Image (cartoon, rainbow, N blue to C red; front, top):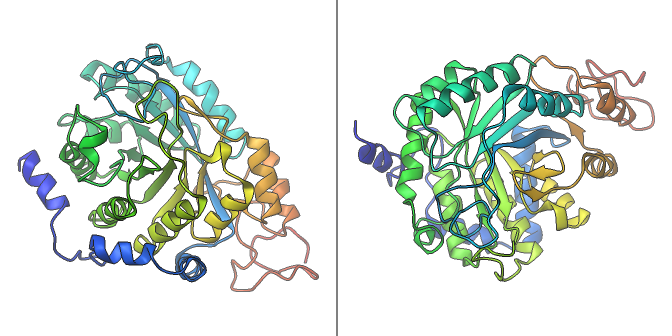
Length: 377
């Protein structure tokens, strides 16, 4: 099967076997739903598939920074932009492991690694395999975002223990060429096809606030929702306007439009984790709270996202405590002491399980009685 055929299959305008097919017009109609009704509908869908009080925590590390030959208008790592981030070599295994150990101790269940390449070379894959094996041995889920993959590379990464591969669609197919000229939208789809064929889980989302129209935001969400199967993880980024990039002067996106995008993503992709990604540094707590209400259930946890700032772990823990939200432990994991106390203080199990895990609701006055709960109720 050729790469072109793979791309066509991923974009085919026919109903999925596992999810409804979403037209751009149907997604745009969701965006136009009255705000409160939209958030309520998304919150209802979210609770049908997830424990709404659990948040999956991922930590992202740039293992190879700067010097990227792509010309993405939003990215400071591109060699095409003034003040580009200087190129650095791929980090060694022990340096990555040091960061991964810290991430796990602070409560992250997934460790994501990014490399600023158009795509890795075979020699890079060998080094990445060693890094992935070492991180996986810590008991963390692993995710990688290394650009376009050649034949066999996805299989090599999976053999090393990679769980997820991140490859964002970025924006609406019709708007893509306005922002990126060194690759095509179909190139992204081709790599996603290789990732799926290798048996890897898919992390795939996009960026909003790049002066796109609402219809183009709907086009992005429709493209994501119509992937077959839908991505297991959907990161929604708000553009971080950085000096020296072509989008440094982009118009600021209204906060309600960001919340609407989260809600529409939740409704159209009900079983996917919807992650609040870049852009949270300057996002008010109240807006983040509405995003969690509207179905976001994952965040990047740590003070750096590749090369942009992110809220500190302490700030995120304080916000989660205010909102009675709990970290989601990894498979078979118990939360580390630093966050287990948070869970116990909220009347939840030290393994991050919900107090209603056994079918009961939380009783704030008299305890919960849920399986695995350590609150003593």
